[in-house]
Length: 225
Image (cartoon, one colour):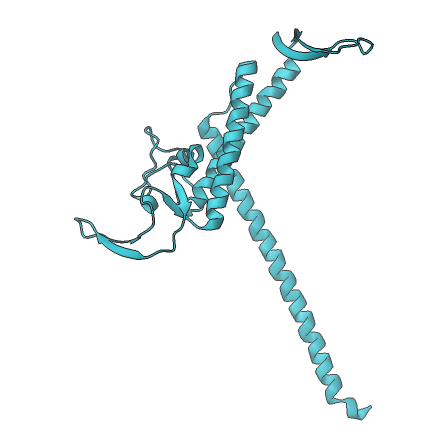
């Protein structure tokens, strides 16, 4: 049994109608338990998908086909040893939890060159924070929006866990595997849509060329009519 707070008003005919909080009980049936469990699993998968979007746009995954597990969640210390961000080494999950400290709009100021002890050369913007990942305006927008969605999803999962004592039945590895399928499915759909668009464009172009040829023939033989 789970205690639920509800608001009960006094009868309408009473001069003063105050709201009183009372405690009632709602039986958590097997059907309700199954429904809540499915919601927690669904929200957990949504959280992984948001982290994946952040991995793609924040350069954590170096725009690979699919971000690796370590690039999304980090190693045992939460670090993603990513060659694309060799100074930052932040996992996408870390960025999702606190994006403002890790991402910034790509600056457009003056630049200067640096060279470390091993002779590695680098170009640095003078107005850039080297402790943050630099993003385009669109990339910054995508990362911050997905971070907000991630925070909301995690808040809902925590609330359901506290109210019903349930946890996701899928492991992080399983949710990552589903994320890879989700990413590949989306990319396949985009390729199919692009192919249909190109096919339609080619068809329209062929039709236009045919009409143009008929117009040219008509013009060339107009004096014979």
